[in-house]
Image (tube, each protein chain N blue to C red):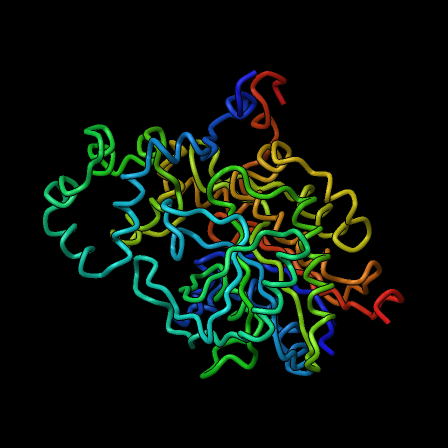
Amino acid sequence: MTDNEEFDDIPGTTVFTAERSHEGFHLNQFCMSLKNAANRERFKRDERAYLDEWPMTAAQKQAVLDRDYNAMIAVGGNIYFLAKIFATDGQSFQTAAASMTGMSQEDYAAMMLHGGRSPEGVRSKKEGR
Amino acid sequence: MARITAGVTTSHVPAIGAALDRGEDKSDYWAPLFAGYEWSKKWIAQEKPDVVVLIYNDHATAFSLECIPTFAIGCADEFPIADEGFGPRPVPTVVGHPELACHLAQSLILDEFDMTVMNQMEVDHGLTVPMSLMFGQVEEWPVRVVPIAVNVVQYPPPTGERCFKLGQAIRRAVHSFDEDLNVQVWGTGGMSHQLQGPRAGLINQPFDNAFLENMNADPSALRAITHLEYLREAGSEGIELVMWLIMRGALATTCNELHRFYHVPASNTAVGHLILESPPDEEDS
């Protein structure tokens, strides 16, 4: 078996492996640059121009412009790096997390207040538990 | 000689720091969470530790993907508060204990834990939120800190078993430091949470409560938890709980549980908090 095959069995979850780190290196380095307030301003002024300074793929840049966090993760983004983007947007971690679930903000917030998403049925696709 | 007297575990959710910094800690949403730390603040004001060895993880702050150390120890005089994308938290600079940190680094490496030595490092909410929860809003932190950063960002983090053994090595290292110091070890992060993908928002209260119970009752059960089990049961970010096992390994075999608190939710996360008193082991004397 190849490394990490078993992770594909966990629904709705992407594990940030060395391979994904390699694929997403420049996307995540771009995110890291947003630690700097002057860079955040430059990014906000012209997102496309700022992204074009980085050797990212077209799909990576488009996912950032679309603020599609699932798409960013699919092309190597890591959530802790991507957090610099929604921090720059003035958005909370809960808002960003909700945007990945297909739920409305209100429904997601209500789910969290009621104890969060149950692990029942989302542990393993194969085992259906 | 230096002694480890107690261990503290706590989650380190960034929204907790933001709530405190914005003065929202008395709101309906946040008040129940901060209430869980009231006893802890009184306790630590009496305990007056000299140094906290603070186990945490960096969140794309000091470490980009250019370099990913599994275990890094901060040996600097002080650790500036990082800008994580919304400006630095308005909290005091963290003051280090370079003498103890350098001794720990040497001792741990010779004890076969290959630490990365950081002579300059910014710290993020992973370290400052636990400080705020335990000490509140202060002009200066009343304790010096030896930060130990653990990689839990890129898979794989160190195993729980490895973390527990690092804790045991920290215990040996602290106890071989000549200065008379009251040292606490804190393990931060967790509990169950998932911040990404369609499964975001996962919380597993039975898993978390069993984990809290076994931190004192049966740490060997926790040492055996695999990465796959953490991912399935506690969510992709719940794997941070391996850091709690470093704290547990650094304490006496038999501890007294002084305080336990569990609260859902803080933003996307289940918050867990424990204080374990660590009496001297026979083997220490």
